[in-house]
Image (cartoon, rainbow, N blue to C red; front, side, top):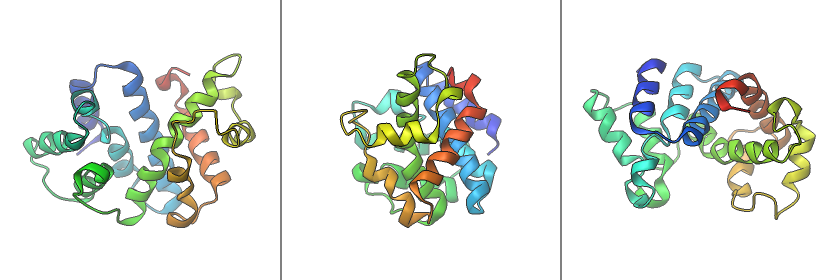
Length: 187
């Protein structure tokens, strides 16, 4: 699958602009992580773009989340491979379809929540611009447990063991990728 095909699928099934921006952010961060961790940047970006493609249709039935996207991929002739397995593992808390395997799946697991946290940090800045966010400002808010308290910090912190990347470096990579794509993210 090519990036253009992934975007078509995402846009066909996702109308909410903020949800689209979340997937753009995860796609950008996944691409940057692939470059750092020796993965395929194009494949990792496609996974990031598609990981929540069915969320609008499944948010009330979380056990179906990712299953619909897998059905859409099946309709496009994609029934196996790393992206399929990674999507199966993305919602394993409900689907029990697959366990996390490899750096690509762990990168998605750990960066998904981090992109939301970085957006939250951005939105409390006076200018609401990613360009004014620093690693230090993210880490400062990180320590404030009441800030963005819905974000599962322990999920993100798995980067240290699963990806052998310190939290600081992980935030730096994610923030840099998001800043390079600030226009698409509306920030």
